Structure formats: structure tokens, C-alpha cells
Length: 166
Length: 341
Image 1 (cartoon, chains in turn green, cyan):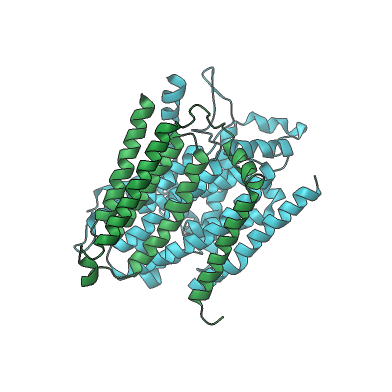
Image 2: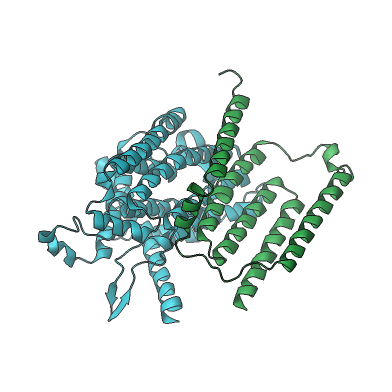
């Protein structure tokens, strides 16, 4: 019972902040709601006994990536959006398509969960950092290395874009 | 009920109370140390040798007018000091202050608020959140100097965070755990404080700690000759006091983490040398406080000794020296660990 209540409180907060992100007038405010959203997601992870994921969520998203968003938003003057962007109908078709896509995805997840309920009670041991590390470096070493090469390429790309003359 | 709710609550009250009291007296000590270095007396008027000065300061901060300038973003302007202070205080949740079995009135109480298995990562991530207070304070003030200062501060924090996190990696490699209590116990079983096994990592950690708390010689965000008072130029009264508290609370966090990771936390010096048994008569939490205090004093000493870095020097030191050195240290530690096994 207590678990369900906690879950629904977090879920409501996450969805509420997500709505605030897209409805806030000032861009800096939207970024702040995004931070709050990420923190609530981290709270949900803690509640699911996945402390490592929660801490990484805070460290990478709330503490790292959103700070960079904030930098961009603060430095770009967005006070008066061009007319193009303020017309709500402009991206209507694209928005509709994306909304349909997300609805279809949610429906698929819901039906899948209905047909094949999630495993409950498997539970993570308190040593889940070790388990995760072992899994990443043994069973999933190739995808892991592919991801790190991808990040390296992105880094090199960013440097090339930023510095035309090396 | 008693063990899961009441004891932690009492501990939280004790820890927060002592942190805030320490902040008050560290401010006085800072003024005294600076004065002694410069052959002055420092505050002398309130109480014996100025011993009541912090109370007078607090009274002043409480009673000052809290001005909200006209063109600020009021919500964010109020949120920023809170965002600065809260991460500094919640970091204390995982710091072990005393040994696992502190005896008090016949009860055995672990000398910490919580021991989570990702304690160190928790500290890193919480420290990463502290940056919001500075950025938002500078932006919401809607004023030039605070904005410049907050951009400087965030660039500085992001740069030095990398080097600091890399030094923590070496500590994890030595201890094999992310739990703060586990790291202290690893230092006990290995017989050496990690500062002796990792002097380079400790040096980088301390320099990075100075930079992350915006202390001299890296106090560029508040360089008063260039930026008035930095990101808190527009703040006054209690909201200013929050920024002030956050800076000093962060100093205590950095010192306490340095004590835990590199100087054995609550352990006595040379925990495995049997003829030093009499050092064990002093309780662990006193050792912890003493060691933390040494680092706090170092902060003040450094401030009175070194001139401020220029901004490009700061960035060069961080990116071209500390980060490569920290990465090299990780690699060397890894090799040594495999070779000596």
C-alpha cells in the first residue's frame, strides 16, 4: 500500500513537472522544471532499490547535462521569439504525428505488460553496483565499448565543429 | 521505530546543528587567522578576543533588510540561495562521523546518518547540484556582474569537478567499494591512510576542493576588484546569508570527505600499530573532528598566503595539468594494482 502511494506521488510529480517544462513561459524556468523532473525520476529509482541508477541519474542528467542546457539558454537571448515560432499551428502536423507515435508506444507497452506481467520480487541485492559492473564488462562488453566509441566520436566531432582551425 | 526514525532524526539535528555552529566559528577563525598573518588583531570588541562576534554577525544578518531588486526574476532569485545551501547540507547524510559502534547510555549507535552502498557517488552528484545556486543566482539578478561571475563560477566548477572525480576513482580502486564506511574500513585493513598511498590524488583533490568551493586562490567568481561581489552582488539579508552559509558548509563537506577518503575518517593514526594503543582511548568522532579541522585551517591558511589566479591561469591549471595528471594517476594505480597482486 505504502509502495503504491509513493509510486503514484512520484509519478504525479514527474508528469506534472513534465507538463510544466513545455508550458513554462521562460526557457530558464522550463530547464528548472526539467531538473525537478529528473530529481523525481531519481527518487523513483531509489524507491525501486536501484540507488546506483538514481545517483547516476542525478550526476549525469541533473548535475551535468542540464547545466549545459542552462548555459545555452542563458546565453542565447530568447526573450522575443520570432513570429515563426510563436504560431501554434506551424508544427501542428508534426506534433500530431509524434503524439500518435507516443500513444501507440504507450499502448504497446501497456498491452505487453498485460500479456506478460513484469517479474516481481526478483529484487536487487544491496551489491548492485558490483553486479552492474560485472555485467557491463563481461556479458555486455561489446555494446558497452561501442557506446564509449560513439561518445568519443561525438567528442571529436564537437571539437572539430567548435575549432575550425586546429 | 526507535532505531529507524528517532535515532536518525536526532543524529540529523546534531549534525546540522554542529555544522551551522562550525560555520559561525570558522568565519571568526578566518578573520582571526587572516589578521594574525597580516600582523593585526582581528575582531576584538564583542566578548573576550571577539569570541561572541559570530552571534553579533548572525543577529546583523537576520535583522538586515532583505531587498528584492525591481528587475529580478523573483521566483528564481529566491530559489537560488536555497539551491546553493541544500546540496551542501544533504551531503553530510553519508559522511561517517564516528566508528560503527559508538556506545552511548548502553546503546550501540553507528556514528553516521546513513551508509549507502553508493556513498561516494552520492557526494559527487550532490556536489554537482550545488552549481545551480550559483548559476541561477547570477542569472536571476538580471545584472551584468553577477551574470559574468556565475558563468565564470560554473565553468570553474565543471572543469575542476572532472579532476576531483578522477582522484576519487583511484580511491575506489584501492578500497574496492563505494561506501564511505567501507573505504574507512579498507584503510584500516590495509594499514595505511590512502593519503600516503595516493599523495598525488590527495593533492589534486585538495586543489580541486579549493576550486570547487570558490575559495582563494580560485575565488574568481567573487573577485571583488573586477566583479563587485560576484554572483551575490544583488543579494542582501537572509538570502545573502544562505550563500555565505553554503560556501562555508561546502568547505566543511570537502574537508570531511578528504578526511574520510584520504585520512582514515574516525581511525586513530596508525590503527594497526599495537604500541600506539593509547591513541585509541580518544573516541573516533574526536579524531574525525580534529582531522576535519586541520583541513579547514588549511583552507584559511591558503587564503591568507596565495594571491588569486588569473582566469586563463585557472583554466590552464585545471585542464592542462590537473586533469591529465589525475588520469595518469588512475592508469598508474591500475597497473600497480595488477602488478603487485
